Length: 362
Length: 62
Image 1: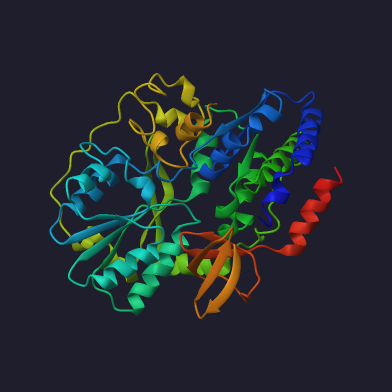
Image 2 (image 1 turned 90 degrees about the vertical axis):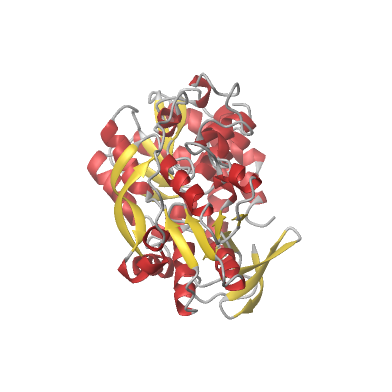
Protein backbone atom coordinates (compact mmCIF):
# COMPACT_ATOMS: atom_id res chain seq x y z
CA UNK A 1 0.00 0.00 0.00
CA UNK A 2 1.20 3.46 -0.76
CA UNK A 3 3.28 5.23 1.92
CA UNK A 4 3.46 1.98 3.90
CA UNK A 5 5.36 -0.56 1.77
CA UNK A 6 8.13 1.88 0.87
CA UNK A 7 8.77 2.43 4.58
CA UNK A 8 9.18 -1.33 5.14
CA UNK A 9 11.99 -1.87 2.64
CA UNK A 10 14.32 -4.59 3.97
CA UNK A 11 17.51 -3.38 2.30
CA UNK A 12 17.15 0.14 3.71
CA UNK A 13 16.29 -1.32 7.12
CA UNK A 14 19.56 -3.27 7.07
CA UNK A 15 21.51 -0.14 6.09
CA UNK A 16 19.88 1.79 8.94
CA UNK A 17 20.71 -1.03 11.35
CA UNK A 18 24.38 -0.91 10.30
CA UNK A 19 24.44 2.88 10.63
CA UNK A 20 23.02 2.56 14.16
CA UNK A 21 25.73 0.05 15.13
CA UNK A 22 28.31 2.42 13.70
CA UNK A 23 27.07 5.63 15.37
CA UNK A 24 26.45 3.95 18.74
CA UNK A 25 30.13 2.94 19.07
CA UNK A 26 31.61 4.47 22.21
CA UNK A 27 28.23 5.73 23.42
CA UNK A 28 26.71 2.51 24.77
CA UNK A 29 24.71 1.62 26.76
CA UNK A 30 21.97 3.91 25.49
CA UNK A 31 18.42 4.03 26.89
CA UNK A 32 15.75 5.27 24.50
CA UNK A 33 12.16 5.50 25.67
CA UNK A 34 9.11 5.47 23.46
CA UNK A 35 5.82 6.71 24.89
CA UNK A 36 3.36 5.46 22.31
CA UNK A 37 1.53 2.15 22.33
CA UNK A 38 1.66 1.96 18.54
CA UNK A 39 5.45 2.33 18.65
CA UNK A 40 5.56 -0.44 21.31
CA UNK A 41 3.59 -2.76 19.02
CA UNK A 42 5.54 -1.85 15.87
CA UNK A 43 8.90 -2.35 17.56
CA UNK A 44 7.85 -5.83 18.67
CA UNK A 45 6.04 -6.75 15.42
CA UNK A 46 8.94 -5.79 13.13
CA UNK A 47 11.67 -7.19 15.37
CA UNK A 48 13.44 -3.82 15.64
CA UNK A 49 15.37 -4.92 18.76
CA UNK A 50 17.06 -7.69 16.75
CA UNK A 51 18.40 -5.12 14.26
CA UNK A 52 20.12 -2.80 16.71
CA UNK A 53 22.89 -3.33 19.31
CA UNK A 54 21.73 -5.18 22.43
CA UNK A 55 22.75 -2.27 24.64
CA UNK A 56 20.77 0.31 22.73
CA UNK A 57 17.77 -0.32 24.94
CA UNK A 58 14.30 0.48 23.65
CA UNK A 59 12.20 1.03 26.75
CA UNK A 60 8.43 1.23 26.62
CA UNK A 61 6.85 4.02 28.62
CA UNK A 62 3.27 4.90 29.56
CA UNK A 63 2.06 5.23 26.00
CA UNK A 64 -1.06 3.13 26.34
CA UNK A 65 -4.06 5.25 27.39
CA UNK A 66 -6.17 2.24 28.38
CA UNK A 67 -3.31 0.92 30.52
CA UNK A 68 -3.03 4.17 32.51
CA UNK A 69 -6.77 4.61 33.05
CA UNK A 70 -7.33 4.25 36.83
CA UNK A 71 -9.27 1.29 38.14
CA UNK A 72 -11.75 3.72 39.72
CA UNK A 73 -12.70 4.92 36.23
CA UNK A 74 -13.53 1.35 35.18
CA UNK A 75 -15.54 0.85 38.38
CA UNK A 76 -17.54 4.02 37.66
CA UNK A 77 -18.09 3.06 34.00
CA UNK A 78 -19.51 -0.26 35.19
CA UNK A 79 -21.72 1.61 37.68
CA UNK A 80 -23.03 3.83 34.85
CA UNK A 81 -23.89 0.70 32.85
CA UNK A 82 -25.95 -0.57 35.78
CA UNK A 83 -28.16 2.54 35.85
CA UNK A 84 -31.59 2.15 34.36
CA UNK A 85 -31.92 3.24 30.73
CA UNK A 86 -28.23 3.77 29.97
CA UNK A 87 -26.06 2.55 27.11
CA UNK A 88 -22.31 2.69 27.72
CA UNK A 89 -20.39 3.15 24.45
CA UNK A 90 -16.64 2.52 24.45
CA UNK A 91 -13.54 1.76 22.39
CA UNK A 92 -13.04 -1.99 22.29
CA UNK A 93 -9.84 -2.00 24.33
CA UNK A 94 -11.62 -1.02 27.50
CA UNK A 95 -13.89 -4.06 27.54
CA UNK A 96 -11.57 -6.57 29.20
CA UNK A 97 -9.71 -4.25 31.58
CA UNK A 98 -10.26 -5.57 35.11
CA UNK A 99 -12.04 -3.24 37.53
CA UNK A 100 -12.24 -3.92 41.27
CA UNK A 101 -15.10 -6.42 41.04
CA UNK A 102 -15.93 -6.87 37.37
CA UNK A 103 -15.13 -5.73 33.85
CA UNK A 104 -17.20 -4.22 31.05
CA UNK A 105 -17.13 -7.49 29.11
CA UNK A 106 -18.40 -9.39 32.17
CA UNK A 107 -21.18 -6.83 32.63
CA UNK A 108 -22.12 -7.11 28.96
CA UNK A 109 -22.34 -10.87 29.34
CA UNK A 110 -24.71 -10.29 32.26
CA UNK A 111 -26.98 -8.29 29.99
CA UNK A 112 -25.93 -4.66 30.53
CA UNK A 113 -26.21 -2.36 27.55
CA UNK A 114 -22.57 -1.85 26.57
CA UNK A 115 -21.58 -1.21 22.96
CA UNK A 116 -18.16 -1.15 21.29
CA UNK A 117 -17.67 1.77 18.91
CA UNK A 118 -14.88 2.61 16.49
CA UNK A 119 -15.49 6.35 16.67
CA UNK A 120 -17.07 8.74 19.22
CA UNK A 121 -19.33 9.81 16.34
CA UNK A 122 -20.80 6.29 16.41
CA UNK A 123 -21.77 6.93 20.04
CA UNK A 124 -23.50 10.15 18.99
CA UNK A 125 -25.38 8.15 16.32
CA UNK A 126 -26.51 5.67 18.98
CA UNK A 127 -27.80 8.59 21.09
CA UNK A 128 -29.66 10.06 18.12
CA UNK A 129 -31.14 6.66 17.28
CA UNK A 130 -32.22 5.91 20.86
CA UNK A 131 -33.73 9.14 22.28
CA UNK A 132 -35.22 7.34 25.30
CA UNK A 133 -31.80 5.99 26.35
CA UNK A 134 -28.88 7.84 27.97
CA UNK A 135 -25.70 7.12 26.03
CA UNK A 136 -22.46 7.50 27.98
CA UNK A 137 -19.27 7.43 25.90
CA UNK A 138 -16.03 6.55 27.72
CA UNK A 139 -13.62 9.31 26.71
CA UNK A 140 -10.21 7.62 26.87
CA UNK A 141 -7.12 8.42 24.81
CA UNK A 142 -4.22 10.80 24.36
CA UNK A 143 -4.10 13.83 22.11
CA UNK A 144 -4.77 11.85 18.93
CA UNK A 145 -8.18 10.86 20.25
CA UNK A 146 -9.27 13.83 22.39
CA UNK A 147 -9.93 16.12 19.39
CA UNK A 148 -12.23 13.48 17.88
CA UNK A 149 -14.21 13.40 21.12
CA UNK A 150 -14.24 17.21 21.23
CA UNK A 151 -15.60 17.31 17.66
CA UNK A 152 -18.31 14.81 18.61
CA UNK A 153 -19.34 16.94 21.60
CA UNK A 154 -19.52 20.06 19.44
CA UNK A 155 -21.73 18.14 17.02
CA UNK A 156 -23.95 16.85 19.86
CA UNK A 157 -24.31 20.40 21.25
CA UNK A 158 -25.26 21.75 17.80
CA UNK A 159 -27.89 19.04 17.46
CA UNK A 160 -29.25 19.86 20.93
CA UNK A 161 -28.84 16.25 22.09
CA UNK A 162 -29.89 15.80 25.72
CA UNK A 163 -29.09 12.09 25.98
CA UNK A 164 -25.40 12.04 24.97
CA UNK A 165 -22.66 12.10 27.62
CA UNK A 166 -18.87 11.79 27.68
CA UNK A 167 -17.24 10.43 30.85
CA UNK A 168 -13.90 12.24 30.58
CA UNK A 169 -10.71 10.24 31.06
CA UNK A 170 -8.37 11.76 28.45
CA UNK A 171 -4.73 12.33 29.31
CA UNK A 172 -1.86 14.46 27.98
CA UNK A 173 1.45 12.73 27.28
CA UNK A 174 4.06 15.47 27.95
CA UNK A 175 3.45 15.80 31.73
CA UNK A 176 3.96 12.03 31.98
CA UNK A 177 7.29 12.29 30.14
CA UNK A 178 8.37 15.01 32.59
CA UNK A 179 7.15 13.00 35.58
CA UNK A 180 9.30 10.04 34.50
CA UNK A 181 12.36 12.26 34.16
CA UNK A 182 11.67 13.77 37.60
CA UNK A 183 11.19 10.25 39.04
CA UNK A 184 14.71 9.48 37.87
CA UNK A 185 14.50 5.70 38.32
CA UNK A 186 15.07 5.08 34.62
CA UNK A 187 18.02 6.72 32.91
CA UNK A 188 16.53 8.10 29.72
CA UNK A 189 19.04 9.26 27.08
CA UNK A 190 16.44 10.11 24.45
CA UNK A 191 12.72 10.03 23.64
CA UNK A 192 11.23 8.50 20.52
CA UNK A 193 8.14 10.70 20.36
CA UNK A 194 4.69 9.58 19.23
CA UNK A 195 3.73 9.99 15.57
CA UNK A 196 0.01 10.70 15.75
CA UNK A 197 -0.06 12.59 19.05
CA UNK A 198 2.56 14.87 17.45
CA UNK A 199 0.38 15.19 14.34
CA UNK A 200 -2.06 17.00 16.61
CA UNK A 201 0.24 18.86 19.04
CA UNK A 202 3.15 19.59 16.65
CA UNK A 203 6.83 19.61 17.57
CA UNK A 204 7.00 22.73 19.77
CA UNK A 205 5.72 21.21 23.07
CA UNK A 206 8.70 18.84 23.23
CA UNK A 207 11.10 21.78 23.62
CA UNK A 208 10.34 21.65 27.36
CA UNK A 209 12.11 18.29 27.49
CA UNK A 210 15.13 19.29 25.42
CA UNK A 211 15.60 22.64 27.16
CA UNK A 212 14.94 21.64 30.76
CA UNK A 213 16.52 18.17 30.74
CA UNK A 214 18.95 18.35 27.80
CA UNK A 215 17.54 15.13 26.32
CA UNK A 216 16.94 14.75 22.56
CA UNK A 217 13.41 14.20 21.26
CA UNK A 218 12.78 12.70 17.82
CA UNK A 219 9.27 12.35 16.46
CA UNK A 220 9.09 9.22 14.33
CA UNK A 221 6.48 7.41 12.25
CA UNK A 222 5.30 3.86 12.90
CA UNK A 223 6.83 1.97 9.99
CA UNK A 224 10.13 0.09 10.57
CA UNK A 225 12.20 2.56 8.51
CA UNK A 226 10.68 5.46 10.46
CA UNK A 227 11.54 3.87 13.80
CA UNK A 228 15.06 2.91 12.72
CA UNK A 229 15.73 6.36 11.28
CA UNK A 230 14.34 7.92 14.47
CA UNK A 231 16.70 5.78 16.58
CA UNK A 232 19.64 6.79 14.36
CA UNK A 233 18.76 10.47 14.72
CA UNK A 234 18.57 10.12 18.51
CA UNK A 235 21.96 8.39 18.67
CA UNK A 236 23.52 11.08 16.47
CA UNK A 237 22.26 13.72 18.90
CA UNK A 238 23.45 11.78 21.94
CA UNK A 239 26.92 11.82 20.41
CA UNK A 240 26.87 15.60 20.01
CA UNK A 241 26.63 18.51 22.43
CA UNK A 242 23.31 20.11 21.52
CA UNK A 243 20.01 18.38 22.13
CA UNK A 244 16.90 19.45 20.28
CA UNK A 245 13.53 18.37 18.90
CA UNK A 246 13.74 16.70 15.49
CA UNK A 247 10.95 15.55 13.21
CA UNK A 248 11.54 12.31 11.28
CA UNK A 249 7.83 12.06 10.37
CA UNK A 250 7.88 15.20 8.19
CA UNK A 251 5.38 13.76 5.71
CA UNK A 252 2.63 14.12 8.34
CA UNK A 253 3.75 16.10 11.37
CA UNK A 254 3.87 19.89 11.06
CA UNK A 255 5.73 22.14 13.49
CA UNK A 256 2.52 23.76 14.77
CA UNK A 257 0.45 20.58 14.65
CA UNK A 258 -3.18 20.57 13.56
CA UNK A 259 -4.72 23.94 14.43
CA UNK A 260 -8.35 22.89 13.90
CA UNK A 261 -7.92 19.94 16.26
CA UNK A 262 -6.12 22.04 18.88
CA UNK A 263 -8.80 24.76 18.73
CA UNK A 264 -11.57 22.20 19.17
CA UNK A 265 -9.81 20.77 22.20
CA UNK A 266 -9.54 24.25 23.73
CA UNK A 267 -13.25 24.89 23.11
CA UNK A 268 -14.40 21.74 24.90
CA UNK A 269 -11.81 20.63 27.46
CA UNK A 270 -9.98 22.11 30.41
CA UNK A 271 -6.77 20.69 31.93
CA UNK A 272 -6.76 19.14 35.42
CA UNK A 273 -4.56 16.97 37.61
CA UNK A 274 -5.02 13.31 36.76
CA UNK A 275 -4.47 9.85 38.24
CA UNK A 276 -2.38 7.47 36.05
CA UNK A 277 -2.82 3.78 36.87
CA UNK A 278 0.45 2.39 38.16
CA UNK A 279 2.11 5.83 38.27
CA UNK A 280 0.01 8.04 40.52
CA UNK A 281 -1.17 11.60 40.34
CA UNK A 282 0.45 13.79 37.68
CA UNK A 283 -0.38 17.53 37.82
CA UNK A 284 -2.16 19.08 34.83
CA UNK A 285 -2.07 15.84 32.86
CA UNK A 286 -5.75 15.14 32.25
CA UNK A 287 -8.67 16.67 30.39
CA UNK A 288 -12.15 17.26 31.70
CA UNK A 289 -15.18 18.91 30.11
CA UNK A 290 -15.10 22.68 30.62
CA UNK A 291 -18.01 24.79 31.95
CA UNK A 292 -19.72 25.14 28.56
CA UNK A 293 -19.85 21.37 28.13
CA UNK A 294 -20.33 20.29 31.74
CA UNK A 295 -23.92 19.21 31.04
CA UNK A 296 -22.45 16.42 28.91
CA UNK A 297 -20.48 15.05 31.87
CA UNK A 298 -22.33 12.05 33.37
CA UNK A 299 -20.63 12.72 36.72
CA UNK A 300 -22.80 15.83 36.93
CA UNK A 301 -25.93 14.26 35.45
CA UNK A 302 -26.13 11.01 37.43
CA UNK A 303 -25.57 10.18 41.07
CA UNK A 304 -23.83 6.94 41.87
CA UNK A 305 -23.47 5.19 45.24
CA UNK A 306 -19.90 5.45 46.55
CA UNK A 307 -17.62 2.77 45.09
CA UNK A 308 -14.73 1.24 47.02
CA UNK A 309 -11.97 0.70 44.50
CA UNK A 310 -9.58 -2.11 45.51
CA UNK A 311 -5.81 -1.63 45.31
CA UNK A 312 -3.88 -3.27 42.44
CA UNK A 313 -2.07 -6.39 43.64
CA UNK A 314 0.39 -8.84 42.18
CA UNK A 315 1.06 -7.35 38.80
CA UNK A 316 3.88 -4.88 38.20
CA UNK A 317 2.08 -2.87 35.51
CA UNK A 318 3.20 0.33 37.21
CA UNK A 319 6.90 -0.49 36.90
CA UNK A 320 6.39 -1.65 33.32
CA UNK A 321 4.61 1.60 32.43
CA UNK A 322 7.47 3.61 33.92
CA UNK A 323 10.05 1.56 32.04
CA UNK A 324 11.65 0.29 35.26
CA UNK A 325 10.77 -3.33 34.52
CA UNK A 326 10.05 -5.32 31.37
CA UNK A 327 7.02 -7.64 31.05
CA UNK A 328 9.07 -10.85 31.42
CA UNK A 329 10.21 -9.50 34.82
CA UNK A 330 6.64 -9.86 36.10
CA UNK A 331 5.95 -13.15 37.94
CA UNK A 332 2.50 -13.28 36.36
CA UNK A 333 3.58 -12.65 32.75
CA UNK A 334 2.41 -15.41 30.38
CA UNK A 335 1.46 -17.53 33.37
CA UNK A 336 -1.62 -16.29 35.20
CA UNK A 337 -1.66 -13.11 33.13
CA UNK A 338 -2.33 -13.61 29.43
CA UNK A 339 -4.46 -11.63 26.95
CA UNK A 340 -7.54 -13.76 27.70
CA UNK A 341 -6.91 -13.96 31.47
CA UNK A 342 -5.46 -10.52 32.07
CA UNK A 343 -4.63 -9.39 35.59
CA UNK A 344 -3.44 -5.93 34.59
CA UNK A 345 -4.31 -3.43 31.91
CA UNK A 346 -0.93 -3.73 30.16
CA UNK A 347 -1.86 -7.20 28.95
CA UNK A 348 -5.35 -6.36 27.81
CA UNK A 349 -4.94 -3.30 25.69
CA UNK A 350 -3.99 -3.57 22.03
CA UNK A 351 -1.30 -0.98 22.81
CA UNK A 352 -0.15 -2.52 26.09
CA UNK A 353 3.54 -3.36 26.56
CA UNK A 354 2.77 -6.79 28.04
CA UNK A 355 0.35 -7.58 25.22
CA UNK A 356 3.03 -6.63 22.67
CA UNK A 357 5.71 -8.76 24.32
CA UNK A 358 3.29 -11.70 24.63
CA UNK A 359 2.00 -11.51 21.09
CA UNK A 360 5.39 -11.15 19.42
CA UNK A 361 7.27 -13.39 21.85
CA UNK A 362 9.91 -10.92 22.99
CA UNK B 1 -6.09 5.88 3.19
CA UNK B 2 -7.04 7.70 -0.03
CA UNK B 3 -9.92 10.17 -0.30
CA UNK B 4 -12.30 8.85 -2.96
CA UNK B 5 -15.30 11.12 -2.48
CA UNK B 6 -16.08 14.26 -0.46
CA UNK B 7 -19.52 15.14 0.93
CA UNK B 8 -19.39 18.26 3.15
CA UNK B 9 -17.77 17.36 6.45
CA UNK B 10 -17.51 13.70 5.52
CA UNK B 11 -15.50 11.69 2.97
CA UNK B 12 -15.26 8.16 1.66
CA UNK B 13 -11.69 6.85 1.98
CA UNK B 14 -10.25 3.60 0.71
CA UNK B 15 -7.19 1.41 1.18
CA UNK B 16 -6.49 -2.21 0.29
CA UNK B 17 -10.02 -2.80 -0.92
CA UNK B 18 -11.62 -1.44 2.27
CA UNK B 19 -13.77 1.70 2.12
CA UNK B 20 -14.87 3.82 5.07
CA UNK B 21 -16.92 6.93 5.66
CA UNK B 22 -15.01 9.34 7.89
CA UNK B 23 -15.16 12.92 9.15
CA UNK B 24 -12.78 15.45 7.62
CA UNK B 25 -13.35 18.44 9.98
CA UNK B 26 -9.63 18.61 10.79
CA UNK B 27 -8.37 18.87 7.22
CA UNK B 28 -7.69 22.19 5.48
CA UNK B 29 -8.47 22.01 1.76
CA UNK B 30 -9.15 18.29 1.45
CA UNK B 31 -9.04 17.00 -2.16
CA UNK B 32 -9.98 13.74 -3.84
CA UNK B 33 -6.80 11.72 -4.26
CA UNK B 34 -5.24 13.00 -1.01
CA UNK B 35 -3.80 10.32 1.27
CA UNK B 36 -4.81 10.83 4.89
CA UNK B 37 -4.15 9.39 8.34
CA UNK B 38 -7.38 8.05 9.83
CA UNK B 39 -8.02 7.70 13.56
CA UNK B 40 -11.31 6.92 15.37
CA UNK B 41 -13.41 7.84 12.36
CA UNK B 42 -11.62 11.11 11.57
CA UNK B 43 -8.91 12.11 9.10
CA UNK B 44 -6.35 13.78 11.35
CA UNK B 45 -3.87 14.92 8.68
CA UNK B 46 -2.90 14.70 5.02
CA UNK B 47 0.25 12.84 3.96
CA UNK B 48 2.48 15.32 2.14
CA UNK B 49 3.67 13.58 -1.03
CA UNK B 50 6.76 15.80 -1.54
CA UNK B 51 7.92 15.34 2.04
CA UNK B 52 7.35 11.57 1.80
CA UNK B 53 9.50 11.43 -1.34
CA UNK B 54 12.16 13.58 0.33
CA UNK B 55 12.33 11.19 3.31
CA UNK B 56 12.54 8.18 0.98
CA UNK B 57 15.28 9.87 -1.07
CA UNK B 58 17.36 10.43 2.08
CA UNK B 59 16.82 6.85 3.17
CA UNK B 60 17.82 5.46 -0.26
CA UNK B 61 21.02 7.53 -0.21
CA UNK B 62 22.23 6.08 3.08
